[in-house]
Structures are given as C-alpha cells and as structure tokens.
Length: 234
Image 1 (cartoon, one colour):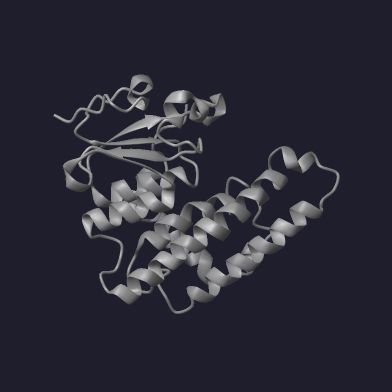
Image 2: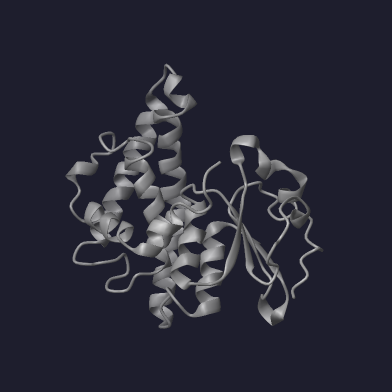
C-alpha cells in the first residue's frame, strides 16, 4: 500500500485509499476538467472536496500541494518511477494523465502539439476572459457603476468564441474526429459562460452554429455528465 503521509495535505484530507490517485477539487470549470478526465479514463481515484467558499484552498495543508491556492490538484501515488507525484494546474494535470495512459492526446507528434496548443488557448484565453465576464456580470462586479470592464471582457469572450466557432467548422471535436483533452479543457468554461454565468446574450451565443452543437455533443458523454458533479458541492 502506498504511503502518502509525507504530504501535509493528507493530514487535513486523509486518504482512505492511498493506492488511488488523490483529487482535491470542487466542480468549477477548472475543477471538472480533471474529474471528467478521470471518469473518461476509468482510473481509480479518491476525491476530496476543497470548499473554496470557506477558503480551504488557502489553508497551509492545501498550499503545501499548490502554493497558488487554486483547485484542482492531485497526488498520483504511482507517478514516474513508481514514486508519488504531486501536481497542480488543471492543464498540466490533463497532459500528465493523457501521457500516463496514452489516451485523449494524439500519438502523432504534429497532432499532439496542435492539441496542446488548444489546451493552452483555453488556459491562457478562454478561462481568464470568461471568468472575468462571470465576475462582472454575475458576481460582485455587477454592482460596479462603470460598465466598461464588463463590456471589454464580454467583447473579448465573444471574439474567443468566434475563434472556437471557426475551428469547429466541419469538425466534430476541436481536433476533428478525435475527442481530446482540448475538448475536456474547454467544455466546462463554455457551459458556465452561457449557463451559470447567464452571459449568453452578452456574447451573442445564439448566433453561433458550431459551438452550441459541439457543447451538446460534449455534455451527452456519460463521463462528462458524471464528472461535472464530482465532487458533490457542499
């Protein structure tokens, strides 16, 4: 049996099954990337809810795993060389799991890097911009009298959806016929933008043809349906 006691996070969130991959998360657009990936892969894992509403991601135990204080994070007891591997940043975790299992990342070198570029596109652009729309449209930012920040982020999000719309033209998935970590990385953010954030009208979502069909195709996958609700919210 694996011994994870060297990781301080296990003092606050004890591992009942230390031989399984440990996931520390909450079902946010970033968090569900990893739960969906794990469900798609069928890997055994143990999930620990980190309640960001109670600032649990800023506790010393969580910060020992991710000094940036953000979910998700993992510990894989069977990492490279058979040693436990702690890892944070959702995009890095997706890449790690894809390479560990040989799934959802093309083996062809050119296609592999093209897939990674779309993961980076989500990490660098879609996530930050859609998140700002959420803040200024749904959360505290909506009380701001100056609406220019909201408009700026809404315009940029609309542009980014246009980039995705163009990429999906004639394609079933972001990379074509193959469902990859690019889709897994992106689907939760598009879902949140038009669902939880209620910003569909702001970004003219109804004018898009390819993105909505792609999103429905993603959400129809059983592993996605399960992963979107892992861990259960408090």
